[in-house]
Length: 405
Image (cartoon, rainbow, N blue to C red):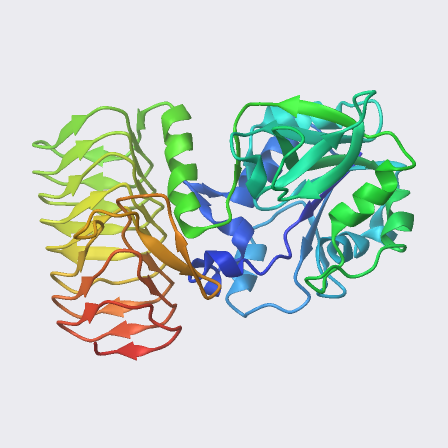
């Protein structure tokens, strides 16, 4: 059976992280979201061919990430008009009567993928959640099959939502041909599924295991926390004398932890990172690889991506920092409002509550900060931005902006 992964979304809600990396490549410990999905498919021998739908036109920076996908077939989306349009791009490549379809922006247990692939015929993953209003909810017929999918209904008919994994007959393409653009101006796959389900039975595979939709920047923190709790501890790198390790810690090959460093797990230290001397890593710190965390630097519940350096006298809390960022000495991230209210973040122009009282910053790739910079809670800094020494960053900074404050 062929497997199709839809990975062509722009990921605008995840900006500034997606300024330089595709949404499916958000980091998960030492890997990425889509690589984890592909490895699960290969390890379970679920598919004989994996097709990954990518954007037809994408920034130059994305090429490096797509080149990391081995033994898969990359298919460019032909028209940029939604999920149904993305699926239509593989129509000529589908050789079998049935195929497996997976959304590229979900974190899911490999057991869920296997359960859907093992269904007799057409099937959809139904995930139990406490907040079904925020998702596409499965409306179930009297005989237990899918009736239709209701997008973000005020009165959900069930607590089962669309889990983004399907087993479908190749006839689905005929139903895509019949749908019109939605109010968003896109061809929605759920519209085609609803039309398909009116004439064909779709089994609902109920599931209440690991499942996350990574749609907002702070979801990257939560996803890594979940995986850190699951992973087993291991120390493969070098730990000098005088280092204190408390709790579960993962230290990958080539990493070095220098004298005087204190680590409270769970913590992940990626390959070839250098920590210390005299650094403090608090629970749920994730260093993706080749990082430098220097003297008198404290990091707490943050995801710091590849090749980023926080060398001297800094604090980073509850934040996501993209690849190749360099903090000037004394750069500080605030993660708690004075009034201790929930931190709000601008998402696609709308100010949205994160639901978290403690939340720091989201920084795009290749950013540079001068010495003694202060960054306020919920602020986003776009890729390639430069922050002037001594600045207080109290608003979002645009991609490539030189911010003086």
